[in-house]
Amino acid sequence: MGYLIGAAILGIAGLIMWIMKGKKEGKSATLQSIETSDVKDVNELWESMRNSMGDGSFTHIVELKGVAHADSPLTSELAKTECVYYSSKITHKYEKLERKKNSEGKMEEKWVKHEDIVSENKQWANNFGVKDSTGFIQVDPTKAELHEEQLYSTFEKGDPSENNALNVKIGGVSFGIGKKDKGYKTIGYKYEEHGIKLGSDLYVVGDANDRDGKVEVSKPKDKKQPFIVSIKSKDQIVGSLGSAITGLKWGSFISWGLAGAALIAGILNLLKVF
Image 1 (tube, one colour):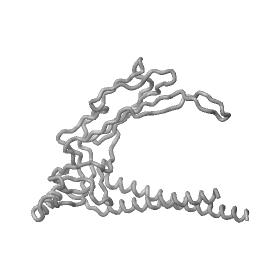
Image 2 (spheres, rainbow, N blue to C red; image 1 turned 90 degrees about the vertical axis):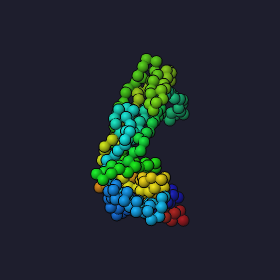
Image 3 (tube, rainbow, N blue to C red; image 1 turned 180 degrees about the vertical axis):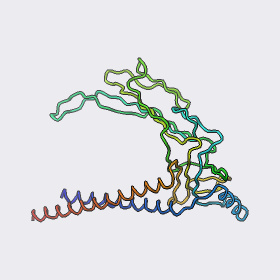
Image 4 (cartoon, one colour; image 1 turned 30 degrees about the vertical axis):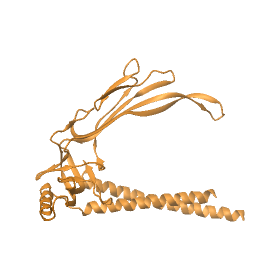
């Protein structure tokens, strides 16, 4: 019976990977079929549709290539880098003395590693968008597939102060973390920050529309259409999709092959019983 259950699990896993492969193939085909537009072309198309159909009627899937821009950029919390977006995170890594039963059923004390995110902050610059040689168009990045770069990463061992408390100010909020306890010891703190620098090459795919009374690129209403804000190029994204598609295809074949072998073994075992 175990072989048959294993065969079913492997068969379902193969099916899930095959479905995921199909979705990525569809996404790759969609991206390759979209031609790059200039900001000027999008604005001219909007004006044309606005004049003929009125405000709020414009919607068009576009692909834009330019640079990340905002009139009032941000300064990231950790790297102190001028950017249009950043995501900062502080992770506390520590050990706790825990009592657990060993293989002989006896209680024993053991130091167990843990980690907690003690601070997380994400910020977008106001009126962020993409700028090319023909103009600027605003982007509403809400729910976008986001590709960013690492701005900062460091690990500080131990407690940063004698009283085992770290005073942190991030996102305009100041607080303390860490504590002094015989059954608790800090390993250290991991500081990470990712973001999109001002002026970075930017690749954007989404719905150019005037639903909010102005032209901007946002998430398409059709869930099958992609919405991407990325520092990666189109070729890099399509290449990554191709690698994933190949991996999922072979993963499906391997799972189904193992499922077939398990099914045969299970049937042979049942025949032995009878």
